[in-house]
Length: 319
Image 1 (cartoon, rainbow, N blue to C red):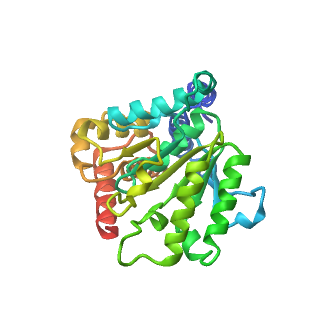
Image 2: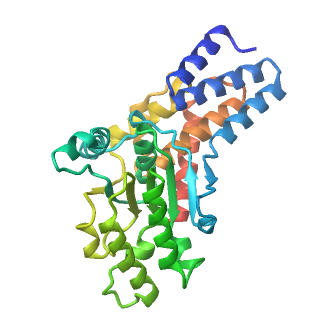
């Protein structure tokens, strides 16, 4: 049975919308139940936590013909959870402020920032930024999977893209064009194909004409191959990079929560150099799960080091 302090902490984190702390406390309760020999209860709690992290659900759009192209993601990450460089943080806060005060700007003939291009290595926070913006502004988040547009809908890509922009106009939200380089490649490149060129031209036209209430975000891992005409169509172009040692420490502290115990974060952060923020978050999740399964409420240095090395190996193999 969870202690009264754990129950109070769980309720507090829920009402303050602190998801990571809520998950940490839930896993602690699972570890507590495991120590008491209540393995079934511990397993149930862990499964509930795992299911809660499955955030992406298929969108049932206004037009069912977009099924398989547009997904709806439940935005849960708060601005406080996003660990990025100070200049990026400032840009994101400006986007949020201008959206909230857009009527004031409109009265003076000014438009709020609402078209943003994000680029940088995988796992550095681009998708999380879209989540944060949607969550902070209490808007739905829709993900357009651009690689599907070119693969699954070849021959009707431009038509599908027009339907997406119709949805952007009719259904206000945050729209993330993921893997944007699938269509955004430089039109002068030798390996360009006619279909891609037509889709990119259409995208540029619709993006320029769009005056909706939605926020449009395009994300790519590679800026170098993007068409130059794209950059003047966006209000902001933000670069994401691998985390600094200080940022790594902040990510570890945010995600380990009360499982941190007596771990020396500064020492462990050095072991995480070379991992993306997404990898470091996964290291914390894996370590907390391992502690729960062992009936422990804190993470030991050997276990966290093992999770870091495992993630580094997986990341190296993937790269």
